Image (cartoon, rainbow, N blue to C red; front, side, top):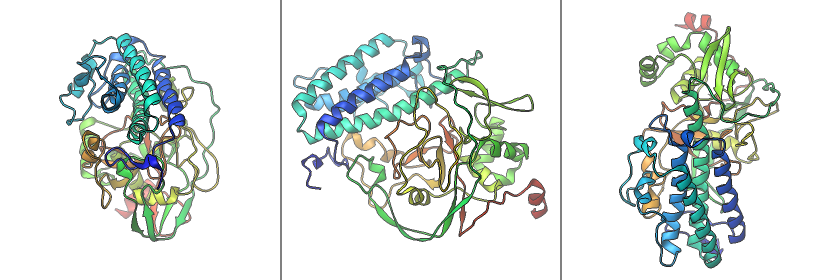
Length: 445
């Protein structure tokens, strides 16, 4: 920890990347965001499909606002904003910065035009490039740039999922882009992988980038447990539906049952009954549901209910992290030509990374000794540590290189427009999944 770059901004908890590599990374990440927006029209880019989603134009502007507000204001001689009004229009939730345009009204921002937002991105890119020439030895600058890139990668994922939700509401069911055809792959048989209990270390333990909510690394005791070798598939979830599980209140948390009933739900988001089976809306249009692919777009309530139906439970985030430790961070991550989960065959734990985020049973809260960063950046994670659950592992919309074993995503229990699925867990040492039949459950009752 004698690296001079360790003099981080405020209390941001990582040693930044070397300046030359970071400069290349800046160009790559900023270019990928534009690539994700390229298939969309100006009309596509302006619309907001629900309060939880944002227009693509807003994502393009907000990620640029982050670099201008948190970096250029600090390091640019004679700083002047590209457009003073953007400070309010494209502030997301940083109260320490000042006023914000209401989140549910982002889709009403027909002005500035998309072309103006693209000019804004180009302008800030040039100014950050100039700052690299004068600030290459400034640890605070490098730290903030790396944070800004990881922030933009989170918005790249949101662009994909927000566009999917938007296009799904169009009666034409349009494709975001024509995907390359990939032959379906059969999923491996589900097996149980056993883990002995004991005191484990949880949290980020390296010098590279992490968010503050991954720290501090700490010890936690785990009972012996077993984790399913792969995520639950569409075919398995279809069995849950066909067994009438959406009509069985005993499978659901009380709030989850109220949520199901009040929203008249009977299947995952984007599914529709079709010719005796199921179809789903994808970013490539409407396709038959692949029974071997991991099920996606589930709420926490649905994941928890399925686990109960299967005679299992969701893993804790500490169990998930302990199981993932040491595995290569490889998988089906963001690739513009695919953008959907897929089945995978293999031995041991597979698909721990990519394909679908995996709900855990853990409420999103601070680790022992957690401290938010100083200033407005301290609002990044800490203030959201209430009424949400942790997901792990990344998805097919997560940029490669963005996640790690300690990465903590979080959403409210009813959220399901993300590529969110589940992996089963059980207490103790087990070797075989025995999914109870409807008849056996009724006999038990």
